[in-house]
Length: 451
Ligand code: UDP
Image (tube, rainbow, N blue to C red; front, side, top):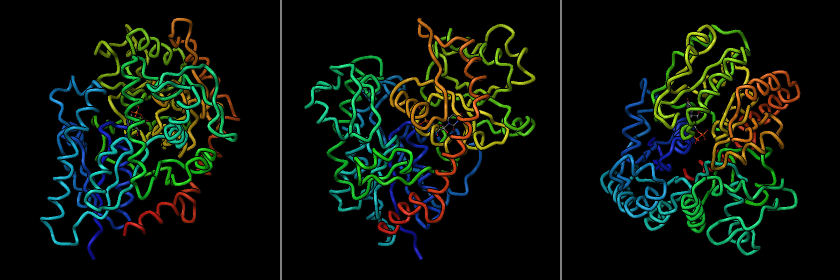
């Protein structure tokens, strides 16, 4: 029997490509065929980073369309990239679908388009071609609830029409939802004010097209953010997504760290990884290195080639020699496998949504160091609501000191309540994706509808 054919298109960022590829894997396991559409630039990176072949290659066809941006430098300008993508990509996307639908026999036609919520134009193209549409929301349900409430926030005078908070107050989107700081609104966490306006516009502009979707799914589960799911009842959680994918990494994974972890005692290693965007200035980079040294614990630290803003990863004098018996640095790790490894004791994270869910699904406690975007909001939930982590506190100069790293690592590793909460949340998460669980059922309903 032929496989139903689904076209999946992520926003071109690691934290968006990764979960949509994981979803694609789950769909392949359930009998689907996937065409996965990256931008040309991301496609090149993913192909170059692939460390070994994936079992899924036969059923996931990786294709690329241009994003309209000329240089990598321009691509780093999020405003420029988003504006150009909207102008250039819909035409290429439409052409791609028509080509697939016209060139093959009827069985291979696209049955559904699954698009990242930030790519409303992809849903418009699918609607125009009378194809079923699903939105994938790659962050927390709380954040989608906030995004859909933007018109009300403007009406209530909490933000202006450019998203700038007009008040410092804590707001409640509903009586049952934890209060939210206006300073933690996602767009307000992007530093530069032009960028804030761009991100706000991107979020605001995409809300009407979200309504074109037949399904809205996300990587979460009901018990994690119950009030948010009450506010957006048509948002169906299917998480935590658990597939690990070799087809989505932007940097080559260093798999040797897994055998290094095999040699470490159980629950002895601090895993340090700050996602795909976080950039540290040299002073903060050095302070982190010296903090890890001061902790006296084993550690595995992901030092992306672009982690520092001066483009070097030169460690403090003598650091590598002093820590070589207990520390390991890699350019990019197989994070899912690392987090699931019995040697890992805790995760020093920037609180990206994927990293957060990945840690929750294996019950690893978190040391939180949010950088921007939704990470402050996620940190609030991690520390204050779910109580599965501790936050790092910057000093008066905004620097996290080596002593702060040490104090919080010691505090976290000695905190039995946090460890217990993390294990309890893991149990709830796993129940959700086991046969009969709510996320499992939502996924089943979703794929049955498409089929
Ligand atoms: N990741 C990885 N190896 C690393 C660091 C990160 O595979 O060394 C993956 C991680 O598992 C997650 C994604 O990159 O799936 C990062 O997404 P997240 O939402 O946590 O953060 P973002 O990069 O979007 O800020």
